[in-house]
Length: 317
Image (cartoon, rainbow, N blue to C red):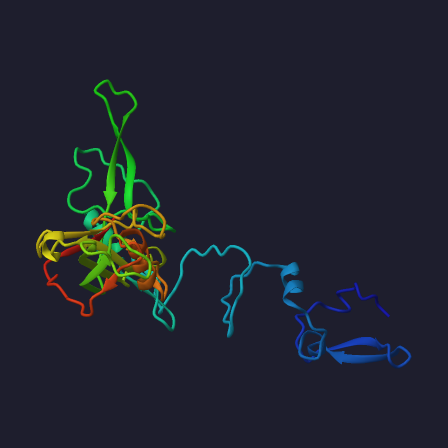
């Protein structure tokens, strides 16, 4: 019998799935048997995974059609991407359609001014550097995140470049940060008190005093625990309009210097007693003004009066 390597006796041919091979059956005492080529490379053969195929060769020239998803942990380096049956044209960008991908023209809108930039987004973490003479005109609002600055006086430094080109010289000046606010309610009320109290005895003749308090309630502040609540001013025998500089005047609520305790000297008419932002705000504020200005003898006359404040501007400093 000729050897297998004798290609004259056993010529080399291309195998087909129905060709037979001779082998042994290890499950039947190594009995000599035949089986089909298709049993090896077809459904009945030993299963191969993708890794074993790629280990054999990972380069191919045929197309792959896959029904399912591909998850890539690595880099995809395509030369073209086809979306909607097209690779797009020069300048187009790939965009989601909601159900797939499509090539679309690049947006034609361009930002041509600072105003247009601020319209797109007006929040930044970078410094603004202006080389001209004017930094800002109009109202400049300052916001320091994450905590909004409190109203009050602030010291800022402006750097001025000298003519010699040296480093900027710092010039310090103070400014007051005012927060314009709309009050929830404003009223004034008459009061009486005794300037020379005698305990349980009536007030001595000539020692009876009277005047007005102005009550302002704020509930709309963006920093409520600092500014919301009741403010009470003792304006004495001055009318509301005179105190507010007429119905077109600016009414300043000095939150920075507001009296917040019952200890201390007499509170002037331009400084309020502030009762905090809790439910007891009004009573707290009245107790402060009563103790420090009325010897704890203040008695309110029933009836609150609402002034015309339609043209007034209220600010907190």
